[in-house]
Length: 392
Image (tube, rainbow, N blue to C red):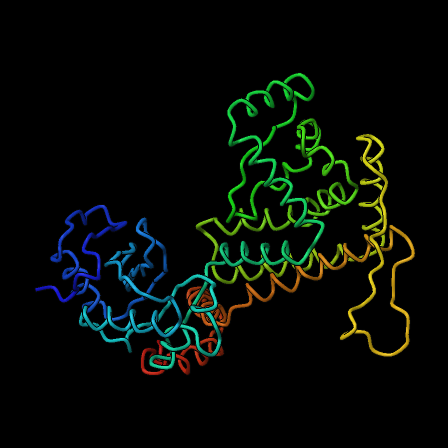
């Protein structure tokens, strides 16, 4: 009898079109194939089902397989790192596999999975150090952009306003129909308003600029959209996020290697770093000022000066405040760029990609007949008895 109990789902899904059986025999075949191949990669993610219960999804890939096979759900009471690590170890044991043959881990970027000291990936690497954990570059970039938006008040307020407009229009067929009529009569060339996916921050930001003309006619949000802060945040978000959009689209190409991904990420960081200068800010400021006059947006104003809380007010010195509106928004401009650089580098600088980079260089150098000794030494030292240093 298959050892998975009632707490584990028995329905089997596979990207392999030849696997259509949905019983325990299929899972036994998968386990047998993995044992024959010896080395494998673990993929897992947590989710909440329709009954509001936490489920852990386990999938496997192995050497010689071009497919990902799902082996079951596992209901858990908690989704902390210890519980998830125990579930994965239990699944590996039930399938009669050896965790020391695991050479890869693939999870999301949540803290319980990727925490450097106590995360699930770290706990499994304590058992098998060669089980490299990688996080999808596309998803990691998406999380980096989300972090940037959270750190920028002007961009965050813009997206909050867009979310309110979405509720106003898309939850009412009558308002949505009225909006389409207004758009057709006032600005027929614009793309209109489209619902944004709450988890995809790197798509569609180029349409934000085109939304302001027709959407500003909607009653209830007109006042918010006539503020200068909204216009500046709209233009700033378009300036910064258009580069992450291009990177996100490029990272989805199936022909890219690990080295290509790292080079593209570094290229985007260099591009964002070049934006951090007075000349480019002046161009953005002139653009926003021109749109302000054309769209009859309110004049820019400095925020109210707030005295520091007593617990943070040290000494008798006066607080530092910006003297002009342009200086205030210039500081916000630099804050967003610095946050984008820090978040992208933090999310995309994954230690596991160094190993993959060396593996790719080793194969390419061997095929091209160039020197590969340095990469070979690194790989041989890392994988130990998996690699034979004496190659002919």
